[in-house]
Length: 104
Image (cartoon, rainbow, N blue to C red; front, side, top):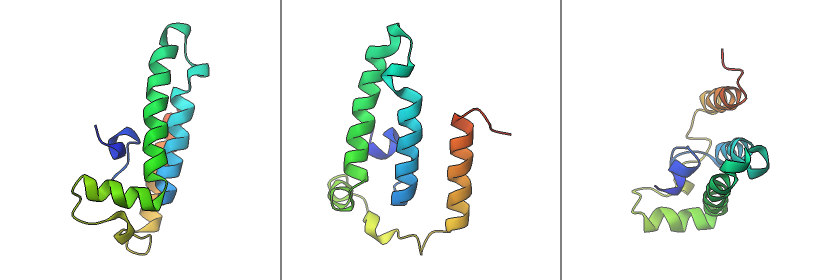
């Protein structure tokens, strides 16, 4: 599983989307919010989430990661000006609402 899959985002995701996805997933999988029998599992998930965010949340590390995994374009080429910010914001909002149980 690659780091983008860990955070459930596209390789073209903006830094803002990556940060929002990380925050939502941390709230969902935080060990303190799990049943006792799932704490160890949640701790492993948290390690993966933290590692993914450590790399993808840092532009230099993300570029290195993209190069190492053989991405055809670096994340720096996927700036917000190339993306459709309105669509991206709607997707993030739907994602957050879904995790909070408020999807309509």
